[in-house]
Structures are given as structure tokens and as C-alpha cells.
Length: 416
Ligand code: SF4
Ligand code: SF4
Image (cartoon, rainbow, N blue to C red; front, side):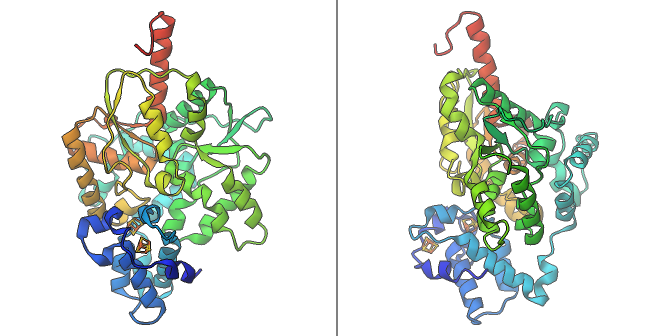
């Protein structure tokens, strides 16, 4: 795919620069969306070499797509980025540089087998208090999860009575099973039943963004087939996965057998919060006097365009105070395997966020994507805060629903 049309749409206005985390970090045009587009255009036209300079610029891009949301001309930056990365992969001298690290390659294998992933998490938890050698330090946020979080989610077989289909996700089902269960429970409280087709697998986002497009396409086809039996909405609890599922139509546009099916599949995808928001009036939510803030998944905001649903739900919890801040929709630096591949930059981006949060001193930081969950846990641990200060939206809301239920049982008013 050469995104010539998208490149031509860029009028170099620069409106995207202020929202770009890597430009904010460096003030360097070459680390901005406009600079990257210009470099890719120059490389296509043979004006610059497809080499180290291009690689340095593109490999530091988070692919967070904040630039797309800010762009008044509707430039589909991610397609241009993919063109540039394809060029780098094809250039023989850069092949070695484009190869993901050993740690990333192991993660890509593990996410295809949630059972193994759970096993690794359990073993890892035994070492949660052990200080890790420097090369393994980046794995620390993956450790220290409770058995309840790792517990296996029961995947039921398909029935005709469900209202939505539930996409479990690899890491969500292996490590944040409590969040998936909480989302299902909340939807059920609102009168929506969930069903989880057994043949579903990992969404393929990590593979696609690590340069394994063919593997990602195979995973997309498997998921499309798994959900083909119905036309119901497909909901999930991870902004990154949801964005990937919504892109299957684009990913398989040239596949004669799957193009239509992929488009139809993508049109059915919603974040669980978008669906729950429709029925939230049936589910009283009561907080416990906490100051709550948010790390919104950038893909949920910029690709699914559903970030506001999370904000609205947080505002609907009586008794807690939602405290917004200007960078809540900005990427935390996790970005798939970016915090492994580009660790220094990822930590600098996180640190900018943590400085703001340290000033705000929230009791809870709500997340809606597993990558953000790992990254923000890493952030709060660096500030010696309790890791449980980071909570998935569904877990937080289910506790609020349970609290409200207890109060109502005791004849107390939830909204007082
Ligand atoms: S995707 Fe994100 S990091 Fe990359 S250029 Fe756009 S705003 Fe910057
Ligand atoms: S990508 Fe959009 S916002 Fe950025 S310079 Fe080009 S036209 Fe302007």
C-alpha cells in the first residue's frame, strides 16, 4: 500500500504538531507528524535515502493517531506511516533494525496462547518483590497481579439469546479477567447479556504494529469467522483491541474472500462503555468520596472516537469527584510494544504525565486498555504509590454498582 493520496492531502499546516507526544517531547520537526509525512514523501520521490534518518523518525512514532484527530484535512496518517515502515522493511540494509526485540517476539508468541500467558503471569508473580536485572526491568509492570485478575474467564458456547457478542482479547482474558467479568456483569445489570464465541483469538494489533502484517491478517480472518454466526454488536474492554477490530475492513480490503465480511465485522464493533452508557440509567453507581482521574486509551479516542463515553460514565458516579486534566487523552507511552522497543522515550512520555498527576494527587487513575494499565502501574510505582491506584473502568464501575446496591438494600439514598 502506498498512501500517495493521503500524502497529497497534507497541506503542511502544522495543526497536528501540538498534540503529538513525540513533538511535545523533542520540539523536533522530524519527530512530528508533518515532518514524518514530509520525510516519507521525500523517500518515495527518491530525494532522501531510505535509511537511518527515516528509521529514527518513524520508529519513534507511537502510532497513537492523535494527529489524525487534530488534522482539519482528514489526513489518514496511519496509512502514510505504514507506507514508510513498509519501505524500511523492504530496504535490505534496514531489515535487521526493523526486527522487534527478543522480548517483543516472545510476547507476540504468548498473546496467541492466553493459557500460556496466564501460566507465565503466575510464575512471574512469585518474583514480584525481587528486583529484576536491568535488561528485564521493563517487565516489572507485568508482575504483581492477583489470582482473581489472572483467573480464567469461562467462555460459553454460542446461544441465540445473547444481546451482544463479547470479544475477550488475549491479555484482557489472561491478565485482566476481572475487568472483562465486571463489564459483563454491568451489561447484565443493564439488561444486556453477553456471549463469547469459542473460536476467537488475539486481535492481531501487536503483530500488525510490529511488522507482521500477514500474521495479523490471519488472526483477523479467524476472528471474523468466529463472529460470523450473528449480526449482533461485538463489544470489548480494550481500546487498542477495539481499534484494531474496527480496522479489519481496511486491513482486508484487498482480500476478495474476506473484504466484505471484514467491513461488516468492523461496523459491529463497539467499546463496552459505549454500550453500557445506553443502559447506565438502570444501574445506580455510588462512589466512596474519591478523587478519580483518567488515562484514556489513545486508540479508543482517536480511532474508535469513543473516549467521551468513558468520561460520561465517570461523571455519573455519585459521591466520587471526576477530575479531568488536559493530557488525559494523550498517549501514555505504552503503545503496544513501544515501551519495550523504545523504552527511554516511553518513560519520558510517561514521566510528563506523572508530573501532572503527582500534582493532582488523584485517589484513582482509571484506564480502559491493558497497555495503558501496565504503563500507568509502572508510573505510579515509580512514585511509590500503590499499584492498585490504577483501575480498569469496568472494575471501578462494578464496585460503584455494588456499593449502590448495598445502600439501596439498607434503605439509603444513593444520590444523597
Ligand atoms: S501517531 Fe502519535 S506519535 Fe505518531 S506522529 Fe501522530 S501524534 Fe505523533
Ligand atoms: S497532517 Fe493534517 S494537520 Fe498535520 S500538517 Fe498535514 S494537513 Fe496539517
